Length: 408
Image 1 (cartoon, rainbow, N blue to C red):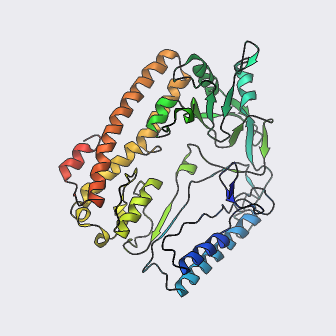
Image 2 (image 1 turned 90 degrees about the vertical axis):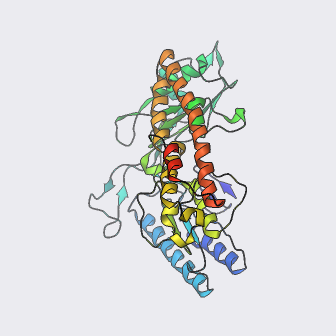
Image 3 (image 1 turned 180 degrees about the horizontal axis):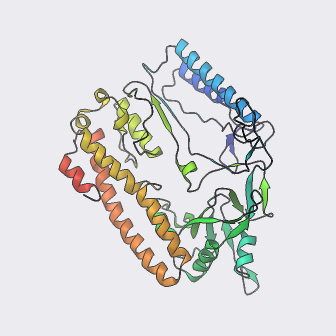
């Protein structure tokens, strides 16, 4: 398989994996006795024949959505003919992330894609050369003594900066890069307005709280810029609109970070939409294991979504402590998930630190570091308690849930 710079997956010679292709593979595997199958489907908002992006309500986008609907209908019919139904099989369907549309307004104004097709005079992410932007604000930043300073950027809506030598947090060169990046602006070729390009900034101190630091220090960025979702940052070319991509992801934006999870099968409540339970992708695996009655020695970062499971599908320890488990689980997600309340609050503080003077930087970074240490210890105790109830027959008592939940 190959992947492009925006995370789409495909095989050589194909523009992507359509719903019909992926679902045919899944059905064939199920029919041949493979009990657990996974599949990826490419997005429907890119025209995989022309290589151009499509906007909401555009004719080719609507046609691809219709084709995907037909594929799903055929898939479920085929499985039902094989005796594979939600009565005996768990189906889990989700999106890896949402996307932000980068483009101008549709035409005509009353288009809806169903009765009236939409067209776009302006469509496409805005590709921006990070080195040119930095040099325009701080001439000589990327050179020193007439020699270039080696730095790299992971091309993305949220570019990760790697300054040569892996300078530690607070290093003067890293601070100069951070303060300059905080001030970046550009005139949008879509709107003609001057856009602030930096939404948030995080160096290794905040990245640790956000679970974005690995065991390999060479992979830890000097800092990450979470950018304006209309833009895609790289190290070449001029500022221009790129019609090949119009749906940005990978950053911090409600349209990107708010997505959905569909569950149907034995033990899943038929309750329709649950828009109250806060969850993310790490919760899928423990939920599946609870439904399957399985355990392993893997320590999860997520928790079982008992809110959407039938009472009879829960192990005894969860049945006897259902409310306490939910209380503790909700608190756990808010302090541990990167885009929950604690992560977003500290990311805002981190941005203030990185764009500020050294005194402000040191004061805020110290608080974030101390808070991370406390959070990690508390989150470890919380997830051990949640795992104990979900998989090891140890109910959560209400006093423990209260004592571990922040604010109580």
